[in-house]
Image (spheres, rainbow, N blue to C red):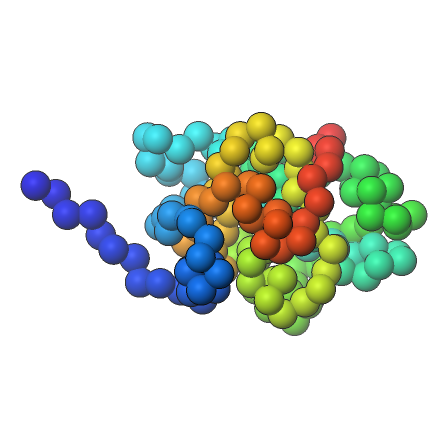
Length: 157
């Protein structure tokens, strides 16, 4: 009988546990691309940090298989223009390095507007980073949106 390795709870797990929000902790690195059989690449959502000309930092969450439409995100968020935060400024802006940005941790520290691509609603459950490269969580998209006060919108090109 194989034993499932129990992952040590990280900060994101602890925050979600405290809020009594069901989620699964996963040890996957979407950047490397080798995924367990039961996970499709389109189930994994990336958390992008951008800056709006009017709002300042803004978060967009969309499938890793898609490209963000900066034009759509700008329009939805009340900006004329949004652009990716340079990698060198990422950690001091969000608190996370490239590949580890996650909506739960960001919401705990900052009140940045968060938008999740509407495809997450159709999927039901999505996988997002858990704040460390190689760690992710699987969570109901509506529960996540409610918890981080995110809006669903069409963000893809």
